Length: 346
Length: 128
Image (cartoon, rainbow over all chains, first blue to last red; front, side):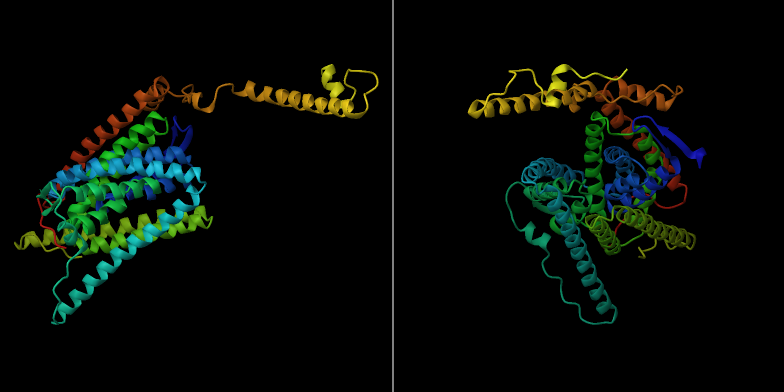
């Protein structure tokens, strides 16, 4: 193992390259598939292997910036990135993050920041997980009824379709997403998710992705691609601001990015083979695991919390890779038999 | 040779501070005792602050982080450490440029590699 140990001059520690590659690959796969940065997996993982926390956060943000470029390029080629929508949301997110930071300062002055934020984090994660899971179960029941030949009730108006009815000018058509709504909708959704992300101290990909689906009305794959576009911008900004503060271990970030680029590419291609609702189910499971991890941290079980998140990250990456391999094999078989591209299976 | 405390400190420790031979009684005595205790407190505070000031006169925000390059051979690690030591602004910019550059190059490279698996990587229709 000594062979793989390198000296990281900025953090002043020795670290195993294989660990950096493993963390990078895991976060790359999950990030490319779900459209998230994955800081909530990588930061505690780096920390339990001996990275000081400020360097863990900064290094993670730096590699997220690079990794998101890889995923965004691939999602862009698949036609999953709505750049106009992404830019509109970035406007709101930037203001929201600033407002959130001020809210955190107010909570700090009141001496409530630490306990309130972690509790809010648990509640937000649980709510998102429950909402996405409930949506998946409702879809699954409808599909079973359809397979049994039963009558399927027409779908009722969704929250997104109700929000599209609010016609405050300027009205904008986002062609890639197929959404026509007031420009204020994505800006305000960005503002809201920015505030929540800033208060919770996270990048916010796991809040924005479901917000793009349920509030803006994007198809799942486009929500994933557009969110990654935004993660790319916020990751680059995070890398710069932590770099200026001297809290980025660039050598470690470069090693992580090597593996994350491969993982991100595989995770992104896996989206092609998995139906939108299956992505939502896996996302809900991931969110519940993250919620359990934060809960363990709240109970003072720091090590158990970090191990839970890292182990589940590796497990979920394995499931995604399995879907990818199945999909590639099916596509190649279909091409050999002349049937063209197969339908998404999972 | 054992350290000999300053006479004033010895006096404060033993309670034999230089002053009138006989302590005054009544209100004047109480005031003198109170002043003596105040002087002792101020002196103790000042003396205890000396090692702290010697250890780091500047505030934490003005302390400079330096990467230790003494044992580093020339190469990537040394270059990173040198940039870090030169200017943190330059280091911040370097981080962004290196990450973005690597992201672009690796993105295009891995794109080619995945293309070699024989899968269609153009625009796709996605089912919900």
